[in-house]
Image (tube, rainbow, N blue to C red; front, side, top):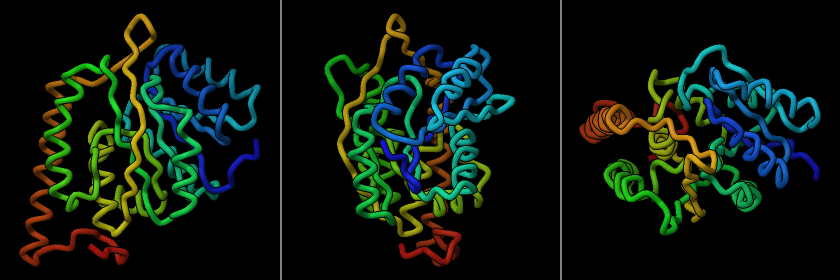
Length: 254
């Protein structure tokens, strides 16, 4: 497999146990390079992954000293990727929910339209938890309002981002560092004029017996999402009243 010089896979990981190694190997089977950002894990997976990277030159492991949240882990990976010359990153959850086999399809869509972001739209099977399937509808409704319907799913983190505009968006706010990363990233990139390509992709929810790990906290993270949408709507309304630009960038074409 010829490693890409422009597109890489970034996997944020926090205490996902052996599942992360299976995810990494599935990603490496179809793409190179793959980077893992270990977000202050205390379960020994950093050492496990570093051992794997010692045998695989297309795998890189970045270790953060303490847990900072998914958005912070991705941000760290994106800055390192840009410094290494990469222009696009596909984000993949470490717990096996996202379909690694679909990485080439998403990367091909990005290579065909490099100025766009490629957003996964989850296709649920009958085993998907009803709370996860139905609970995302509120966030999706607000996100579609904030983006004029451009984003079909706000929470599915299987995506290809153009790195430069995403880093520019993240540098304008202290938010987007935890579970609020995925929806706010899509909204702010839309506000910068980055077109959204929505592609369906299957999602699975491994059980605990299968190694499934979830750090989602229903009360805490829904409160975080509610505050995020309130902030974004206030910015959007202020823009409509002519008070502020939607994107703090000359690239804005909204």
